[in-house]
Image 1 (cartoon, rainbow, N blue to C red):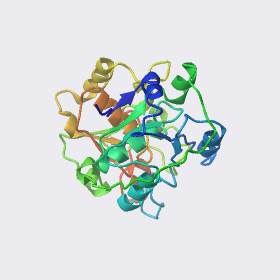
Image 2 (image 1 turned 60 degrees about the vertical axis):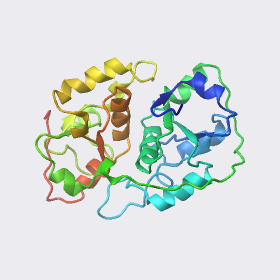
Image 3 (image 1 turned 90 degrees about the horizontal axis):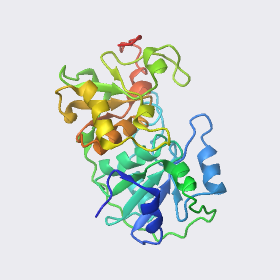
Image 4 (image 1 turned 120 degrees about the vertical axis):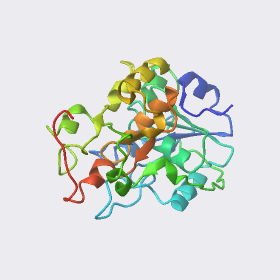
Length: 282
């Protein structure tokens, strides 16, 4: 049985020696882009490969893109194959922020490329270490596989599609409330949000222990904004298309399947000063 949303530390530990399972460490710090790699070198789940958000899970930034453009599918497929990920591989992604940076991004990217057997470690590395499970500093010896990308571009929206979003569809902004309202902006040069977007910060998908809330609680959380709308009418946004994947994952855990990603998100939206900017609560 493929794992397609979340996996517990105990289940992952039981499969560490399974040759068809590949673990990927996705730790990243926006303020210190090499911090995740250093943390990986200091200690990681045995057998894990390291995925760098900027280098592996994004394309180069241009004058019109956001901070983390979607990677070229062929280039990402080559990287995945070099990590030993093939068509039958169960992939497990983890970070140290409950999946927000950047395990959920890898989860979404693999689904975009047609690989459904990917899950995020619930609670991330803190859950693993709380359970007393081992860390390693060895870099694994990897048998490369052939990964064939079959991107489904129905899963994400361009900025032009967001500008033309029908009134019955719902844009959810995953950033913190203060950034959404435009009261502060620590990363991007313009503060505020896309007009019409509603705010649903990713942090509230998690319980105090850093694990996802139960599916029923997540469903209630999203249903409060969806109302009678089907899940497929929801589009997720954030600062650069990374933490928005966490809300998308949370909806899948809740059984609300079919929502999509605005991949460029706020940092792409503000590249054109002619695009409107909203501030305040809504």
